[in-house]
Each structure stands twice: as structure tokens, then as C-alpha cells.
Amino acid sequence: MIQEKLNLVPHLPGCYLMKNEIGTIIYVGKAKDLKNRLNSYFHSSHTGKTAKLVSEIRDFEYIVVSSETESLILELNLIKKHDPKYNILLRDDKTYPYIELTNDKVPRLLVVRNLHKKKNKSRLFGPYPNVTAARGVVNLLNRIYPLRKCKTYNKRPCLYYHIGQCLGYCMHKVPEDEIKKMEHDIIKFLKGEHELVTEKIKKEIAEYSASMQYEKALELKELLDYINITLVKQKVELGDALDRDIFGYYSDNNYLSIFIFFIRGSKIAQHHHTIIPLIDDAGEELTRYIAKFYENSLLPKEVLVPEIVNDTLLEDYLKVKFKKPEKGVKRKLINMASGNAKRELEEKITLLLRNEEKITKANDDLRKILKMDKLERIEIFDNAHLFGTYNVSGMVVYIDGKPAKNEYRKYKISIDKNDDYGTMREVIYRRYFRVLKDNLPRPDLIIVDGGIGQIHAAKEVLDAFNMNIKLVGLKKDDKHQTNALLTENEEIAIEKRSELFHYLERMQDEVHNFTINYHKQIRSKGAYASILDSIPGIGEKRKKELLKKYKSLANISKQSALELESILPKNVATELLENLKQLNKERESNDGKENE
Image 1 (cartoon, helix red, strand yellow):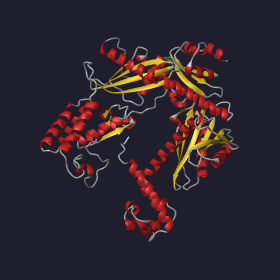
Image 2 (spheres, rainbow, N blue to C red):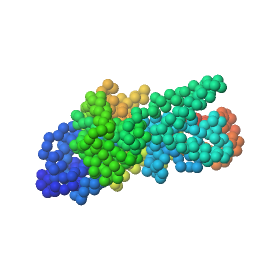
Image 3 (spheres, one colour):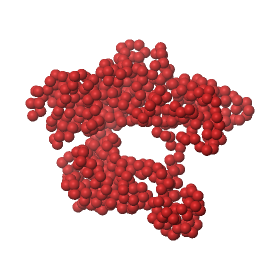
């Protein structure tokens, strides 16, 4: 059948969609010549991930387009639509943090990620592949320049005003030219011109030293050291100050290593590195990677790429200048990026291959122990709540032993009581009703983080949907550590030193952390405002009495249970204080986090 279809494929540009035995699209690619590309899959020898892909292909489709640019646009759209598992392997879904100087009358400095919501992109600076570095720069500038820190104006000056890091814009009228001067200096700094700030700091150090305020002088000296060590980057003589990105690459052992330099203000400001498995040839993969890279990053004025990249195609698609320099400083920069890509891959290839082998073995061991014919997609569920309130569930997905983070899902549960089985029924119902309704990929295995009761609750729903999917639970010992797999009919002990145990443990930690983080978000959003409504035994009357007497939840949390018993029954007072204690801890742990 495949050979017959290959005979009909034309020598034209387009996209192709590879399908497995059940008709699921497992890979999407593009080609300048569809016939040559498709023939290469079926009439050539392959290794690595390409060999695994080819072994699973049972059918294919193709779509002819009029140009290579159209084929690239179609390919990216098809990947988004179908989420093929072998394209997921090639993803770098990382969204890069940028620093934003807001366009308000009195601006603020923020660390942001979602660039698509920003109307004015001219006041975004970056990218910063390391979020810690972005946060460090914001903190540095906020200490030097007394900009507004609060999101909304307060009715009275806050702590930042009293420590000299805000001019009290909520109470005082600050001259517009003073604000503009700060903006001007900050923008120059963020573009790589650090001299203004360093001279300002040196001057203040001298003033504090002269007045014998040595602690403040030492604090500023540490800031100066931070700038000199961390932020003053290697200067590049290119004859102009254009923003440029430089891509280098190296491929070996069926992996592609990609290294990027971000040049801002004639200096190498940041760099980024990633390694992906090779499915297509290196030129196609790197071209595709660059096209997808700029879905999450701002385009510079110019991009320098190595010779294997289709620069004409990218320039037409992204509407920015691409160059493949053959000599001079720009060529040296590409060589330097490629050299770094080679070093990174050589350092990590042994570990990558070893991890690949361990993951493959652990996944195959799990398949054998559960007597399954194939095990590619696993969906794992976990639930979280606080004394029966703020019920949530999380689902993480593993494909061929690796997390597919774009497929993770969060569920806010409608049941507002301590009912683990009811929660499990609801999340399984919602997930697999959607799978049936939208014809989404079905998992080969479902794992619930719980015992036989959780398995039965999930099985009820799957049986009602007539879905025959393998279902297991993870049993914990008295030390709350996983020690066995549970099915409906048996308990399977897992050796704690085995790769399979560590594999299951990683999946369990992943779903637990994902669910707990969502739970924290839910609790931190309006948790205090609604806590009195969520405690059984506190109605409208008692709520009014509590707020009338103690004025605020913060004051209520400081009372003893005995004190609250003047209004509440003993058990209700105790439960309220336990809830408030948990929420106080949550607020403290969230303090100081940046707005991303």
C-alpha cells in the first residue's frame, strides 16, 4: 500500500503526515520535493529516533503547496493542530523572560513572559534565558532608581518609600523630567550601556565613605561588583549596535545541539543552548527550530545562521534579515556558537545516551510486568485539597518515557468536600469524556496516585464510557513511599533499586508537584476572602459577628480557639484556625515572587 502511494507522490513542495497502525498522526514534516523526501524514509537505512519513527509508520498523507514558505507555515500549523508525538520530541517550549519597563506615567520594571499580550514591544528587553538573571537586574535597578513598585497606588507611602526605593508617587507630585531621566538611564542600561549606572554608584560610594556611612558604601560596592562580574559582557566589534541573534549547531549520535548568542548593544548579552533528537536532516531540523523559536521570542534586527539553514525561507516567513556570512567577524561568531554547541553535546552525549537507554528499559519493564502489547502514552492523575476545600486534580502525560508538558492538564473540582473517590470520578469523567468527544489520543495506561478505592472509582467511569484502558494505582508503605503497583486483581512489588522504581517515582513526583503548584495558585487567589464561607458551621450571621468583633481575618488568625468560642462552637473554631494557619504559611511562601 505504501509503495503504491509513493509512486503517486509528485516532485513538488508540501507537507507530509505519517500515521501509525491505528491512524494516529505521529509525525509532520515538510519538503521542497515531497517524492524524494518520502522515498528517503522508506528506501534508506536509519538509526536513532528516525529508525523508531519509520518502524511505526503504516500510512501517510501529503498536501501539495505552491511554495516552500507555504509548506513551512502549513507544517507549523499542522504540528500545533495534531501534536504528533515525534514532533513533541523536537520541541523547545521554553518561554523566555524579558524585562519590561511599563509605559505608565510612572513606570514599573517587571519580569514578563507572555509577549503576545504586550502592545508596546519597544520597551521589552532581553531575552534572559536565566530567569534568575532577569530578576537580579530588576532588583538592581529598583534599588538604584526609585521607580514605582506597587501595581496600584496606595493611600499612603509603603515600605519602599521609607527605605528610599520609591519617591512616594501616591502622595507626592514628582517632576516629569525627573521620571524621564530615570527612564532614559534605565533604558540605556538595559540596552547594554552600563557606564551611567556604574558612574552613579561610584559617586554614591565616595559620598557615603566621606560621611563615614561605611555599611551603605559596602552595599553599593557589592552592587558594583555584581554589574562588573555578571552584566558587563564580551564586546563585539561589528561596526554598529544592531540587535542580533547568532545560531550555531553541531550534530552527532542522532542528536542536534543548538547554541544561540544574543547580541544587544554590541555585546554578547545572553546565550541559550538546547539538544534535540534528530528525526529529519540537520538543516531541516535547525530551520524548523528557528521558525518555532521566534514564536516565543522577539525578533532582532538581524539573524546570523550557518550554511545548512534555509535563510531565504526563514526571511520570507519571519520578515527579518537572515545572513549566512562566509568570512569576517560575523563568520567567527557563528563558528564560536557552533564550537559551543559541539562542546555542550560532547559533554552531555554519554549522559543523554545512558538516560535514553534507562528510560527505554524502564518503560519496557513496566510494559512487560503489566503484560501489555505496547506502552507509549501514560496519563497520571493526582488530587489535592485543604480540609476538603479548594479541591483540584492534575494530569501529567508521559510519551515514550518522557514528560510531554504541553499535554498536562489542571482540573478545578466541583465537589467541595473531603471525598477522594468523588474527586477521582469527576476528573476521570471530565478527561475521558473530552477524549471521546474530541477524538483525542487515548493512553495505553492510566496511573492513579492511590489505592484500590481510587482504582475502582476510576474504573467505574471508564466502564461507563466502554473504554478498555489499562488502569493501575501506586501503593505507598507506612513511610509514605511507593513500594508496589496495584491492579484490580493483584499487587505487584517493585524493587526499590530498580530503574522501574525510579521511573515510577519520577512520574509520581511530577504529577504531585504539578497538582500541588496548581493547588497553591487556587488557594492564593482569593483564599482569604472566601475562607469564612468555606468552613462548615460558619453562616452569614457568625461571619458578620466575627468580622464585627475582630475587623479582619488577620486579626482572627491571631486569636486562640478558646477566644473564638465566644462566637463559634469549639470544633468550628479549631477548623477555622487550622485553615488560617495553612493559608498564612502559603502567603509567606509566595511573598517576594516576581510578576511573570
